[in-house]
Image 1 (tube, rainbow, N blue to C red):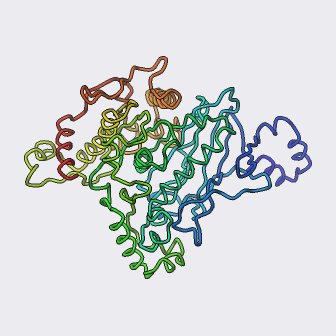
Image 2: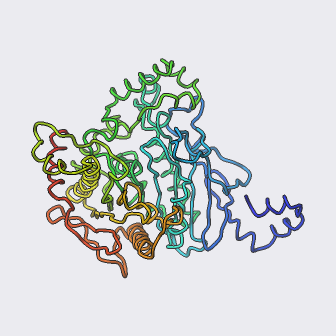
Image 3: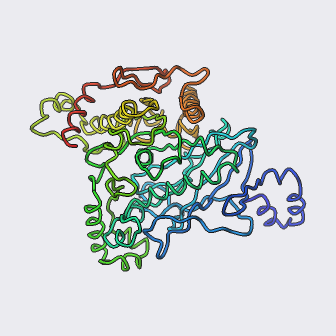
Length: 494
């Protein structure tokens, strides 16, 4: 709620009107003119904040399962002081309920209160398995980046069946002859909005970094491979997972025909055998039949080829690339990416057979492999450099989980207080280091900066990476034998 609202509820409307006319309050409610209309945000502690800005028309009714279209214009000044709802999703039982809607295509902006020159822009794409998450989660609060001279944007995109359903009738009705991947098209629409509007917030549309974690990193990987995203960003950061797994992540790769069959079968399970029947269902009905949905790589539109092939052939959007993984990804996500069979039994048993939890270690190794291959392919086929990291700091209150999947996010954003942990000085120091690396990379296309430990770019012939820990330093490839095993294992499955 705004200060004015609180004053009015106290019966002090005359005082509120006087305050509104004062320069101090006017400064705390900055306005920006966007292409759609004027918006009003808030400002405090040297940071301007604008929340819940529509970047596309609500994808509801006949627009459900269609590519996003630009947000409509508005005439009156629009309040941008409250987050928009999350895109509709199945709420996990271990997470608090949050407002959800199909009308969810909004973004948030944090910017320095004063900017003398156009600033680097960073656009965050949240994770959640393409099924969950929102741009308003507390760990994504962008003030720390803004205070370091960055304009930070967090975006929503359609999730699960509403974001990635392919269907023969959808393909037939689309002018581009494909379906699914609506969540990726939402991300592209948000990046187009950034290009058109971010200068009004003090940002430089010619210096945009996209970054994300988990499915957000997979989306960054897809955007780097997609011809539709060319020119919309200039650097990428990926944290823990990519699209390079030959089995297509959690659900298996689907080309367009397979994806359409999957979507049609999903509708039939819901008692909706036609597109009209599917569009008549409520979001709650659609989510009553839980199943995984995933981007389709061979849709011929967003991705005309497999992401791996795009990079292997040097056809990716060739930009500076910073990627990495955590030292115990399997502490919280255990995915059977690697399976024992007759061809690999001896090596598999040597690497994992003696462990109390082989799936935990193999999951960690597989995520490391995905990020190493991303850095490796960019270094081999691109002109722009890549950097690889290995994050190795457990939360102090969850040491049994190790440096688990996603635990680096609060360090990157400088939002340690978003989690109730007994944080120590070493955690705060590491957080500052990581934010400085990320900001240096966004500003200059190189994580190295004044006073920072030197981080060499990735060289496949002499691979070194940065261990991000209380005692940071350059190290060789962790578990090199496991990584060599995975090279052969995934190549045989490609």
